[in-house]
Amino acid sequence: ERIAKVGVAKDMLLAAGGDHSDYQYMLKMIEAKSVEEFVMDDGAAMPPSALHSWLTRVMYQRRSKMDPLWNSIIVAGFRDGVPYLGSSNMYGTAFEDNYMASGLGAHLALPLLRKSWREDLSEEEARKLMEDCCRVLFYRDTRASSYITIGKVDSAGSAITKPFMLETYWEHPQFVKGNVGGDGSW
Image (cartoon, rainbow, N blue to C red; front, top):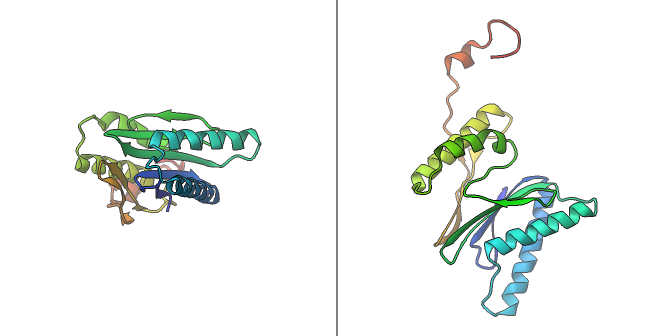
């Protein structure tokens, strides 16, 4: 899995691309921080923005020591009625936005998100948009799996779906016919 519930209340999500062992290392660091917060027993818990800032500093520090965590991460959370979405890369560069993608998705899915996203998207519309983005990514990189997982964070907490298979259609006439010219392109 490349997405996990994190924090004391497991009310935030951390998604990562890149090196899986570095992602596991980050999850262990977050778990240790969560245990430390829990045993303080003062009722305080790190909000999503603080978790994102802390992970960004960790990634920048590791990069500065020439031992980077080879990941791009996305932190999502909802605290005190305010949604949060932040991203960091292996260099410690961070930003926040209403939507984001990493890896190949930053090149192929972001244009779709920019075109279709609006402030008042329903959950069903948002899910369809995510599935459409992932379908485009799968069509462009068929070595990837057509199974995806979707995470959601709202006032009720965080949730991660079970992996499910995207509906795909490989019978497009151009897919079946291929390139008649033989120059290697479509």
